[in-house]
Length: 337
Image (cartoon, rainbow, N blue to C red):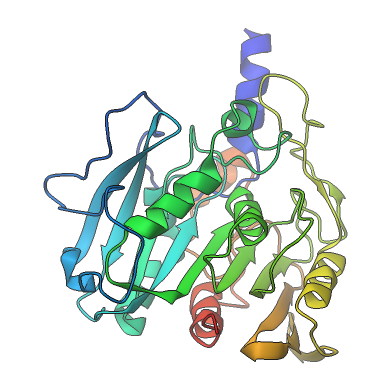
């Protein structure tokens, strides 16, 4: 029993990117061609990539819907939210849950639906395989062990959403989801900007294209340390569920991307425990780092989950910053040019 419990416990505690009530974990199954929920009439993989001649955003139902794609022989699921304020050519934000989480959990925890109501953009909440994303061969969990094609899944998801502006497609995520956003920045060219929260980059990234980035991180994060190196959940990538997180320091990672973007020297401002370092770059891009002193592994300003925090020893969300509107302001200011 102990042998079975140890890897399960490691996965449940992995990254601690999940808060709030949740549905059962989506499980991959061999699937027929992609379909949408009949109730949602949502996007499917048979639709072409978004272009200016595509149907308007109204092809998505107002409010919440669900859809699925078949990628690599697996049925992949995701939720969509289209506010009534989203018009033709609306931006699209892909929100990537942390390990242990799901798309529905991310929707409930981080406030993106309410932000979409105000900003007039569409939101997608994809589900990882067994609550994990494949960032590298060492991380994380089942998705990494089985070499799941998460880059292909997210790329096809973006192509399946009708009526959005291809110059204003963005990705954000926490923890394991934040790490996937970095991999997407390295392995695709479909995103105008990414917004990792409490994450790092552990994938190979030999020839990245310039991209705008806003990265938010707690200075006291024990899971993905601000100073770099392995966190408290890492098992060195060994065992049945690989969890190896041994990234660079957050400031050095951001400096790497500033060199990629050919940015100017950053300017720094401080407001209480929040330090913001902004570097402007050619073609309207920017690379921004927000550091929250005293904060741990969490999404600042997210909904607290006292029971989950107590049982799983999760860090309480910081109240020094509301990450979601901060991220949206940055994303909205940085379309692809």
